Length: 135
Image (cartoon, rainbow, N blue to C red; front, side, top):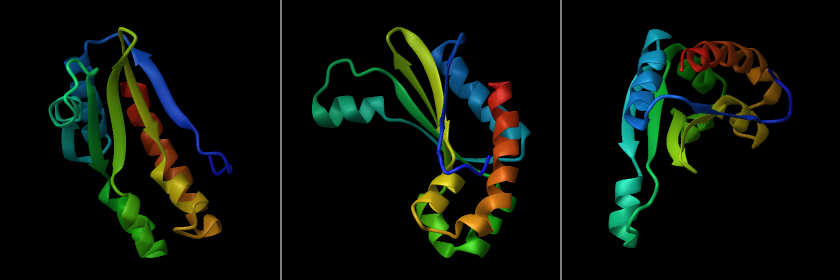
């Protein structure tokens, strides 16, 4: 999982929107991640931009302290892209979930040394895969 490419995990789920958010949170908690914030963006976009019916879009921000510490021990700059995020959104009548590896992104954009991040990227990928499979 240490390739140069940063893939976006994305999938359609068969649950309702609110149920999907709950499942993402529960899956993260079950794998030792702490939920930092769950925030719907659609309401703000509707209010601040005057949009009448922007599709639902929620971010679930989470952190697994052991992984975060390892990243910060490699480079304090990694904290600039914390925490891990999952998004739940509506698109074309479907409920979607997406996630991208901040550990890979950090290494790719030069926040931390790629070689130093390799084992952390692998370990994080394993933990995220367990979460992903539960959603």
